[in-house]
Length: 173
Image: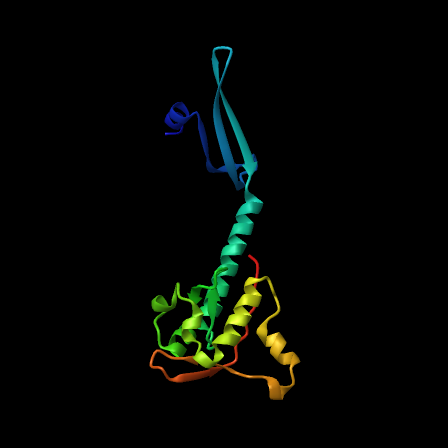
């Protein structure tokens, strides 16, 4: 199969496992290139140790799985939004709070859940975040005297009111 790919494409790129003379194995990234020089065909093989990359990938996968479990199982309603302020992640608590399924919430604008009397404040917060602010609303609210702090109101699918205190933070990935 490798020989056929070299003949048809002239190159192969993939991963393999190499073994040291002491018997231990390690992952490698392999590039095989067919080269013609002076009427003769040569095969050039480059192999690079991929151990560190594999470790980093495994650590990243494990971290993502931990985050996903914490996010999904949190009793606190949480939405993940993309750069365009569309919902890309919903936990069960958020779904239960607003009365929409996770599938119904995904891809939507969270403004759908904000009651009319809070929409101006929501839009201002969204505009600040879209403009690049990394200051969270929770931090801004905590700097105000308690008498000036105001919980947000959202609406459930059933049109009943949900009182909430929102913490929003822009992050870069």
